[in-house]
Image 1 (cartoon, rainbow, N blue to C red):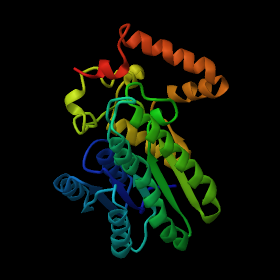
Image 2: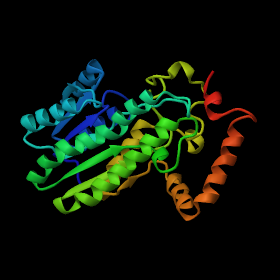
Image 3: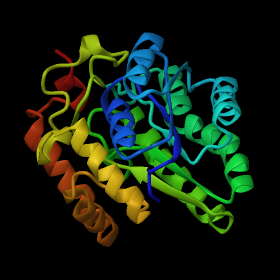
Length: 274
């Protein structure tokens, strides 16, 4: 898919990866850009910088996702690329409240489902379209110290696989973005930010911390080649292969990695709490 002249929605577009994607899509010649975010002022600022449209949107509410897509089609006549990107992180394991998991599931999984449910009919009518769902390398591997993040990101990848298989015959292409650590405000925006220490991102940062603009470059390349997995950190491909080849060996290796990161007797959650 080429981004020139495309109409795209980007959720979580006010900051971080979302903002970088909007700006890069603009440079690639997108003709219509909709910046959606809970942060209405931030979305407006980004949208104005690229001549786009800002929409305040809570992606954990299906009615707001539906409205976002309907208003985009009404204004531009179509939607070519739906980027479901909003997300956040928390820390914790079995002790974490179930309500936190349910809330994160809405943002990391149901938001992707609702984006697909309400955009795909318009795309099929137009002859095809593209879904880009932001997950994480955690969705292919795991996230030490965050049960909820790991579970929901795995679910996001699985949902994306289902969509790629089920709607391919209708001209719907799907990619899932799975970076490791990226310079964004995801930690500052975390509901558990008061519990996060400076080391919170260390497990994901083992292969380096990318700038959001570098992730956007990987997205442009991946969408152009219509790759399902978009991996800004190429090492993730090898890690996923090792996991698939021998899950027992991979689990043992991850346990050893965790032991190196966390002093004896401490859990990942303890290490993430200052």
